[in-house]
Image (cartoon, rainbow, N blue to C red; front, side, top):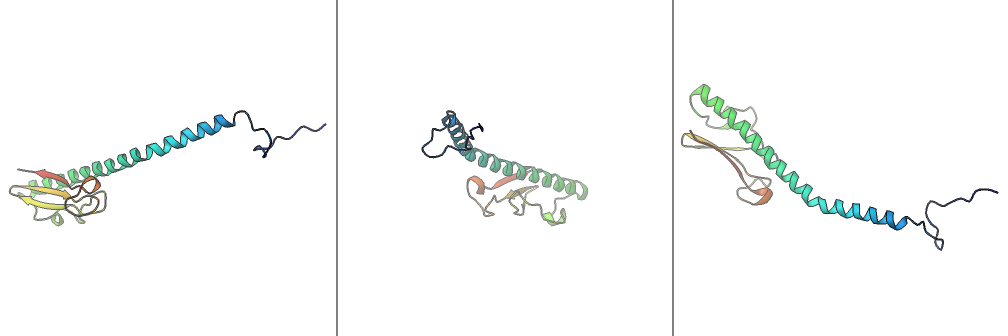
Length: 129
């Protein structure tokens, strides 16, 4: 007598496997958990872009300071220090503003326009002598 073949999935009208509800429950919980974590993952990504921009601004400020120490004055613009203008995490060029004896670096955020909130909020780095 040949062994009875068990179908991969129950056929309509036949009895389902006893563990099918457990499998469906586990898959459902995993899917809901993944969907619930999406906003948190997006928030972390935005934070990392802001942190990366702050690090880029710090490096740019260090280069401006080195220029200042070598030349005895602050540069008139970032072109005097860099071959290409340094950019933030969103690809926008950093702005350089001289303020008295110091300077300020500005990232205009994701939208590249002054002001804004959340991702579009401006990021400032000030260095006063």
